[in-house]
Length: 140
Image 1 (cartoon, rainbow, N blue to C red):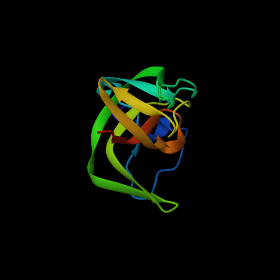
Image 2 (image 1 turned 30 degrees about the vertical axis):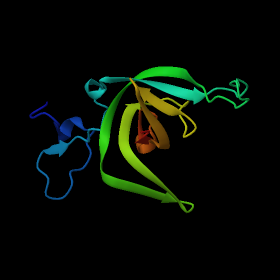
Image 3 (image 1 turned 180 degrees about the horizontal axis):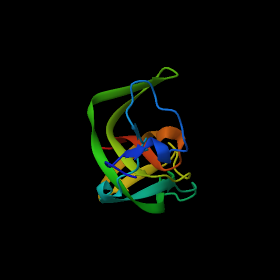
């Protein structure tokens, strides 16, 4: 019998013992889920094209091809977040949250309208393959 949202009666919990000091109710652990309503930015995940195109001076032209279009949430980073790894410092200006996809690496970049974001680090939130946090720096 449910008495309050998030609480269940101990008798319906398979006869498990109550923790010390608990009444007849146990709290149910609710896992963090992704809030898809916050994914309001349509972004493009882009990969660098194979080199081969040259301009009139013989220089190779850097071309980026869209690999995937996804919905994401783009948020400015709090202050100046620095991630130091192997003596390299990467400045982070934005954190992009999106659904999990295994195709995104730091070799890619993100495009939102005319704005370009260089991917510094990709974090699989809680290692559950549900949500990614992408730490980026906006190209000027």
